[in-house]
Length: 51
Image (cartoon, rainbow, N blue to C red; front, side):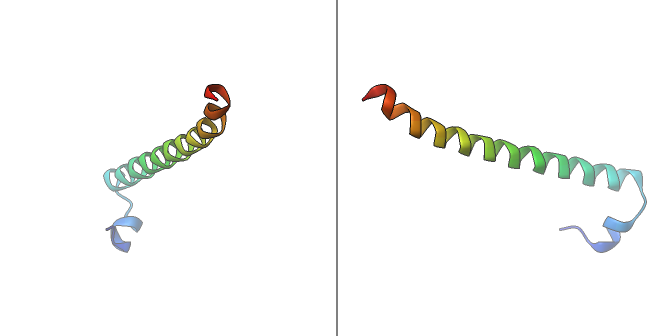
């Protein structure tokens, strides 16, 4: 957990680490969202192909 002090402190190391964590979280959310969309599309398309 980040404290308010570490979020508002103007150190490049802390800000860099926070930016990297935000970027990683964004990538993880994007991958999860796209994989969910792919799974929904696959479940909608595959029965038409196989049956």
